[in-house]
Amino acid sequence: MRVKDLPVADQPRERLLASGPAVLADRELLALLLGSGSKGANAVELASRLIAHCGDLGELARAEPHRLLAVPGVGPAKAARVAAAFQLVRRAQAEPERTRITCSGDLAAAAAPLLHGQARERLVVLVCDARGNVLRRTLASEGGSDHTPAPVRDIIATVLVSGGAAFGLAHNHPSGSLEPSRADLEVTARLHEAAETVGLRFLDHVIVTDTRWRRIPSPPAKNASQHDGP
Image 1 (spheres, rainbow, N blue to C red):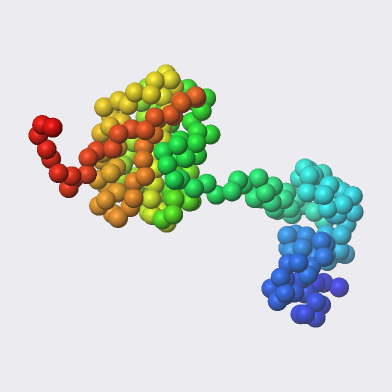
Image 2 (cartoon, rainbow, N blue to C red):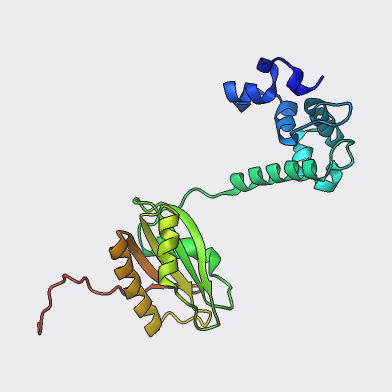
């Protein structure tokens, strides 16, 4: 019997939508991934054969797609769909807890995995919510051994599109120097100004090497009082 010929209350998709995925058996959840059965077997029956072919659900999760193709009725599309679903689970389980940026050191540490060991300069943008929780880390640009472009307009657009309220920048110096260049200082000032214009909070801009980091000085506030002498 085809799954769609079962009473509506017994169909896996309808049961999941009504009561949640926890009420479904392994074979029923897998049947929803497969999407359809094959000649002589409905989706639930095909799912049962697939689990039995691998031995258990754990082995199925670790199986290469080509191994799944050995089950009659499982073609490339079904095998790819199952492999992709288990890969998403592994990635979700490996996802670290959301990082929160509370200081320049947090910013440097969060960006470091994208910058350490790189032979070229990279510019990383960390998009945060209003509390400093990192929503997104993205590579804004990659240049040569001693420079990389800093597209201010694109950076601001990335933050806005990502739903951020704040953002920070980090880039590496493959030479190991922590001295900011004139371009580093200029782009930091431009980003401060651009962020204020669109109502974003610019957290900081840091230089990161494989062993150290340094904050790039921010420009003085526009409304800061000016004094001559002591």
